[in-house]
Length: 302
Image (tube, rainbow, N blue to C red; front, side, top):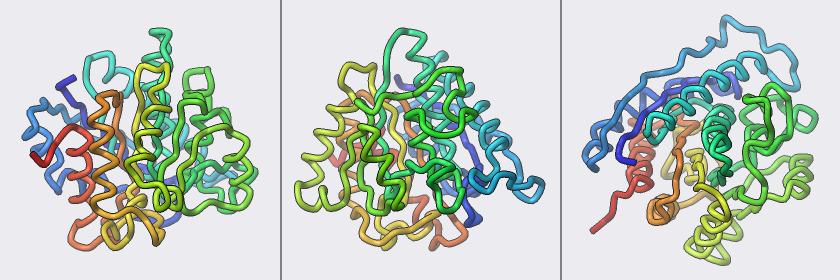
């Protein structure tokens, strides 16, 4: 697939810290489109999905803040992703907070479900994102999207196409986690998904971890969706993220993850989220994100 459609989703209702709504603009300023074209791809930038503005909304249920607005955005976004795949393009979704992954994954899963095929999911993140409204200490939905993709959580998010789950835990892998809420751990443990923490990476090495992760996500599937929360990378390299956590991946480790995904040639969609230019340094995090996108799309050192 040599045509890529960029879909911006500048949603910031899923978390408290303001600024991630500017993530899509920061990526474009960092040269995303031209650099992808430089790899030989045809790039179709669909612009940004219209999203609700926080100041014009009420947060509603404190256990799942802005749920109707986020669900509506994800529903429209999923339809865009589905249409993009139908038209033979690879979706590159840029956010926005990580709640938008519910729409991305649902759109990819629905496209292949209609072909009687399953999809896998590689979730690269410092956080598990496996809370539900009942377990979340904050009520912020950007801490719930992986759970929703696996069928846990509000029906408005789990059933965007009236079917759930979007992906099976058998083919879902969480890579790089280092910050998990106490009650969230119970859902992670019971869900059946595969989790590789930063300790696993330290002890076993990233190459081994990614070989296993790719094999799991690709097992009896049409391929896998990839979602990258930039807080996977250590704040020393990526300071401008929604929820920074020390002890993350190095610059080269982050590239290796994306390079090995590219080598597998089974990626069905790519999503990059949680870039916050407000707390960034000279757009450094967006520049790194563009470099990582290029690695995922096949850019090589030689």
